[in-house]
Length: 447
Ligand SMILES: [Ca+2]
Ligand SMILES: [Ca+2]
Image (cartoon, rainbow, N blue to C red; front, side, top):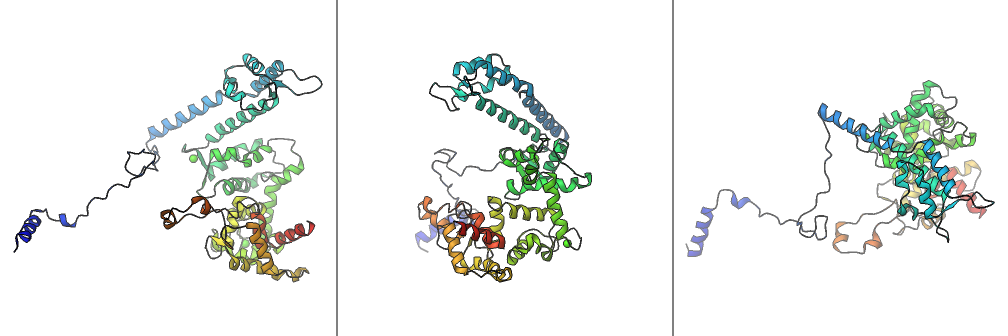
C-alpha cells in the first residue's frame, strides 16, 4: 500500500459510522432586498398560522374583548341627531350664496363649524381632510360634498360594527351561515312585500348566494367584511330599507321579494319531476332553450352536482352567471365551461364546438346560418389576445425558465384578455347563448 493510500484508509477509519452518507449542508438561499433586509441570508417567512383560542377562558376573553371594542367604536360614531347638528353647524358657518343653495366653506369657516360640535366630529375636521376636497379659486370647499362624505363614512363604519357582531371567530370574514344570520336579523327592516314566512329559508339562500358568488371567487366559503362593505351588493341590500322603494327598483334589485320569488319560480318551473333538484334535461328549458347544449353539459361536468343533478344553490350560481354576464365573476364562471380542454385559453377549436351548436339552431328560428369562421374572427378581434388565437381569462404565470432567462416581465405578464378587453361578457354570451349572439348581431346591424 502506498503512503497516500494508507493515509486515506486511516482517515476513513477515524470517521464516525454513517458520516460518509451525510450530504454536506446546503448554503441558505440568498435574497437581496427581501423583507428581512440584505443581511437576512434566508427566505423570509410569509405565512403565520393564526392563533385560535381553544380553552373556555380564552374564548370568553376573546368574545368580551371583541364586544368591548365594537361597543367603543359604535359609541364614538355620530348618531342621526348628531349628523343633523353637523349640517346646521355647516349652514351657520357657510351661508348659501345669494339666489342659490350652494354653500362653500373656507378653511376658517370649516374650523368655525367644528367649534359647536362634540368630540365625535373631531376626526372629520382635520386640515388634511379639508385639503382632500376640491377647492374653488378662493380656496373654499363644497359644504354639501363634505357633509355627504361624513354621512357615507359614518354609515360604512356602522355597517362594519354591525357585520363584526356576526364574525364568531373574529377572523374579519363571514361564512355563509354567518351571512344568513346577519340577513335574517335584518329582514324585519327590509321592504319585503308579500313575503310568506315559509319562504324565508329560500330567501336567505338567494340573498346570501349573491354575496358568495361575487365576493368569494376562490370558493373558500367566506367573504371578508371589508369586501362586503366596499361592494355595491351591500348598498343594493340596504336599498330595501326604504319603505317607499319604487316598484321599478324592486324589479331590478336581487334582494327584493319580487326577485327572490321570480328566481324560485324559475327553479320550480324547471323542476318538472318535483324532486327538488334540476337535472341536465330539465335545465334545457332555461331561457326558452336558448342556451347552447354543450355549454349546459359542461355546467354539470364542472360544477358541483348531487347524483348528476343541481341543487338550489348551484342553480342560483348559474342564474347569477347568466344574468350578470358582463361581470368578472360571471365571465370566470363561463370561461371554466368554455375551456373544454382545460388549456387555460380558448382557441379556434374549443370555440367552434360551442358556436357550431348556436349556428345549428338558426334555421329552426327562420334565420340563415352564419359562417362560423367569420364570427370567430370577430371574437379574436374583440378579445385582441396577446398570443395570437389564444384567448386567456386574465393572466398567464411565468415559467421558471422564463424567469431564469430574465425576460421582460411587462411584455408577458399579466396577459389580460377576456376580463380586461371590455368585451368579455359579449364574447361569452355569443358562445353560450343563442339570444346573446342574436343581440350582438342586432347591435352590429344598428351601427
Ligand atoms: Ca368569521
Ligand atoms: Ca328535478
